[in-house]
Picture 1: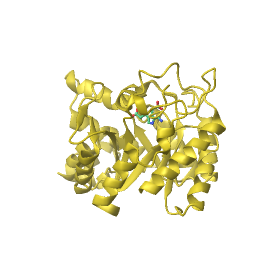
Picture 2: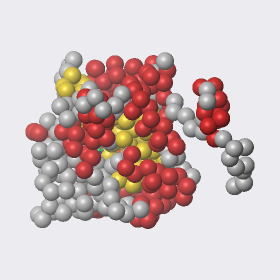
Picture 3: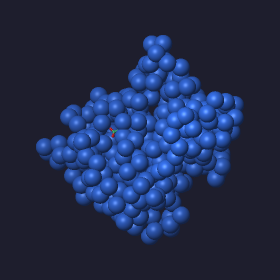
Picture 4: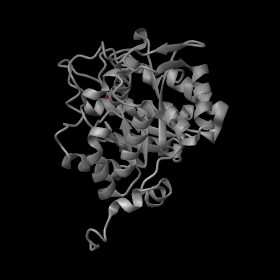
Length: 332
Ligand code: PBG
């Protein structure tokens, strides 16, 4: 790179005014870059607060439809759904994940009935909302999560969601071989149009705590998820995960958590040039809210700055609990 040197070169010249800053701005955030995760609960007219996620609630199916309408009004293109499953419906084999009348399917059908293709629905594939032990898969006597047995259940879960009307199947379980197995069943069963967004680069992170409260698995979970989610120390291994999932038919990939892993967003985008999403997870949301509550920062500015950082790192979009708030700010 060649350029003049000081004083001919004064980089501050282009920063002096708002119009000039706008002209040289390299990255932008729009509502189209946002995916809004929502938690669904049973009942009618139910809104349940989640104490570790201030400002985020679980909503019954009728109210989820209202949230979906708000998202459409603000130009958010996609929602991500997660269910809170009653403990009596949880089991060792997570059979509830295959129930065509489960909460996820009912929410999916209700939103699709009301809004059709006005909004996309991304549904999470993993067994943790349905297991009695809170792991994402089927466990053996020692508590180890079994890969191939779990993939079989995940395939059934994905098909169940596709039949209900899911647009994007998003496996977050980190089993080996699940993308190919799910792609095969979708092709065979007439769902060739249904996309797969793989949580390809998902780390065993301490930032997921509030989410586990939201889906009701925190109290059930013994131990950790380190035998399937990635070691936060590893970067090269992440590229192998992405390569594998793309070869098996993933349409897009995700890096998770978000801000502490922006290096991986950039690495994946540079290596594969595919749609790459980042999940600003529950613990990250809670950190921002805690900072705001402590008077350490301004919510609007913090939220928009973090979203821009994801875009600068190469993210096509961001899953964030601040999505509706951010979209409203961006539309002002
Ligand atoms: C589980 C799943 C998790 C999240 C999304 N899907 C938690 C986990 O792996 O324990 C975390 C999302 C968040 O923290 O916001 N399949």
